[in-house]
Image 1 (cartoon, rainbow, N blue to C red):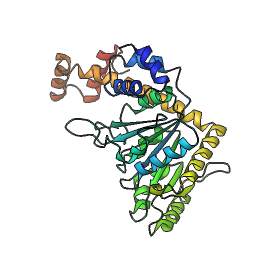
Image 2 (image 1 turned 90 degrees about the vertical axis):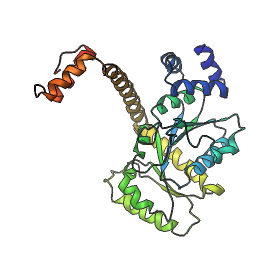
Image 3 (image 1 turned 180 degrees about the horizontal axis):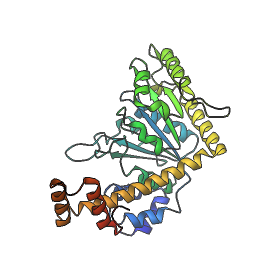
Image 4 (image 1 turned 90 degrees about the horizontal axis):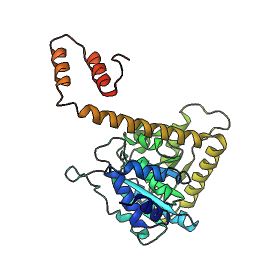
Length: 321
């Protein structure tokens, strides 16, 4: 595969090239290193918005409404929808993205479903690299929609420039949000399905809970609460306005750059740990691991000392270091 040609085609906005690059990412292709090296100088211009919340709050409908709003503003939009995995095929269960079919023929929108493949936290392990592909392909805004699994959703905060948390009335979401810890990660809160009874009460409850959180100094960002009816497009412009305000605040106060540095550091750490795990995995049939296990069973060695020896054998470092 001609990686430079594929990257150039992706930069020209050709969906097939973008799809092939993301497939290389998902499949952990041997050419992935070459792909990432080619994309590195091209990425960094996109604004990444994460959407999270409990199942049934309308994340896909809200994502579709946001796509429409950004397209009206003339922006190219990428959507990375992270879905639950089939336990049999490993593929995304909701790969057809039925609710986003309105944008299927728009050349300024790229929509991709990714399977979590058992990864906790609502995000596929390959999501950071897929975001980089969409960024390099010229997307101005990248919307990352997570699985919606409740207490594992906090991973999105590590991948997005701005995190948007959706709730809906009548679902006990205020209490669930507090339990799940997502009240700490939201930059913008959206009460969707605001035409239902209880929407005002949900917004008040959410505002009260945010007020009980950590104290904010003057000038700190206070997450706004926006009410929407995404199915009818109501409130979407207000959501975009809130997102843009957070982006401007983040740029002014340096938190955007800090988030991106933290994101890059976490990605490097994940790749390094994955490589180390693969190398240790290769030792499972190795006699050295069997000997260490035998010594633990015999009481000659504790598991920590054995792990030190195992890691030393893989990395070439001295045991205990």
